[in-house]
Image (cartoon, rainbow, N blue to C red; front, side, top):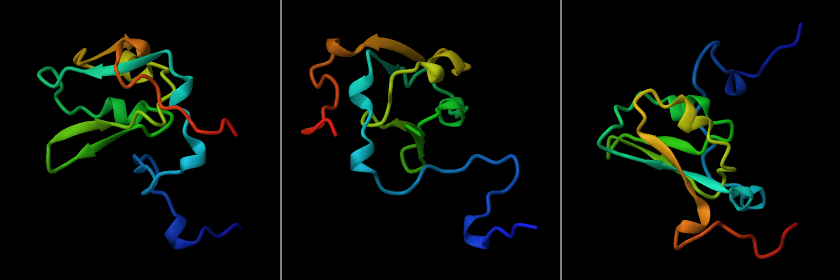
Length: 108
């Protein structure tokens, strides 16, 4: 039987928080064509965006009582937009934003 170290155990059926700290060589935001845009008035903190995001680009800021999006790692898959239970998320064309996409100085 394989024994998992206590510090690496993940409780069954839980939401695992995103790793603390960023991985600068894993920035993938420059792949994105569309980005999610949140309407804070509609958001009821259901956390579907956090649960369904395959890249852990959303996290809960408990102090602000709001979900926060990390543009550096969002690939623009729009899963969060599709899974938002209150339609608080919509997608917008990336180049409509002044900051555009996150670009790496070197591609690899």
